[in-house]
Image (cartoon, rainbow, N blue to C red; front, side, top):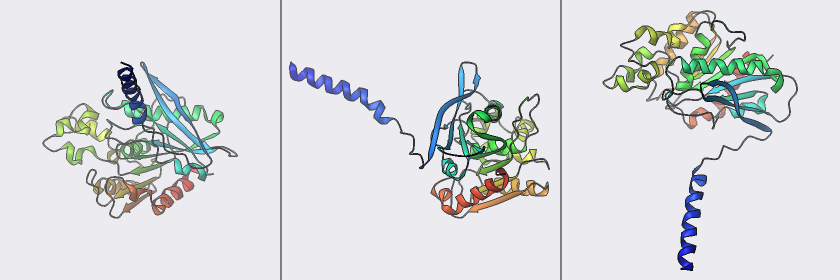
Amino acid sequence: MTRRVLLLAVVVLAALAAPVAAQKKPPKLPAGVEVERDLVYAVRGDRAMKLDLYRPEKFEGALPVVVWVHGGGWKNGSKDRCPAVWLVPHGYAVASINYRLTGVAQWPAQMDDCRASIRWLRKNAEKYGLDGDHVGVWGGSAGGHLVALMGTLPKAEDEAVSSQVQAVCDWYGPSDLLTMPPNLGPNKATSNGAKLLGATVVEVPELAKKVSAFHQVSKEDAPFLIVHGDKDPGVPLEQSRKLHEALTAAGVPSTLHVVEGAGHGGKRFQTDEVRSVVRAFFDEHLKR
């Protein structure tokens, strides 16, 4: 009987420990970096929208801010494993945000949340030692799509605090939903684009244009750095090329950096060369 009780206890303890072991630990922070997690920047119904704020442990003056917007097809992903933290030791604050995914809400909820995070950071700039006049955005894939729109959409109406940004770093984001292959193929009704818009781009072409940075470009847009792999199987390189050309034609400072041999994300985007390009861009446009 005693052996059975002990065996049962071991099984129960193992079952209780399994979920804890399965949880992913947050990545180790670079030396000299601290983080405040799960700061609530907005409330949508009963849902708290949160961000993680990374800053140097020691700094003087106000920190320019870079907001990281995660990818995941607008339906997956989270703020938790932010790949932009390496910028912090170079004199930046980095805010990694969650936004409502398509399983919760369709467009424009995603943009509403992104803009709300910018306003919150500006409202709380003095509290956290931030430079609210110099805010940039950076995102990959679906996040790249969102940050590109943050730099090209007209100013939001009725804002007491501006959500306009001063620099955009777009990593392999779709810039024109009307020409993205999955949105036009045989499975277009179940594509990520259709889930975002609530209908296929064929059914709502005008809405698709409003949700595409390529069709929103104007001379007032923020400076852009666009980074894309030449072997990307998910978002064609042409999506970034046409956005870059449109920005340049409008007189907006834009740089297109093509990563040779790179697919849709991956280690080739974390090289010293790519990081140097990203850092130089934000240094130019966000530092006093």
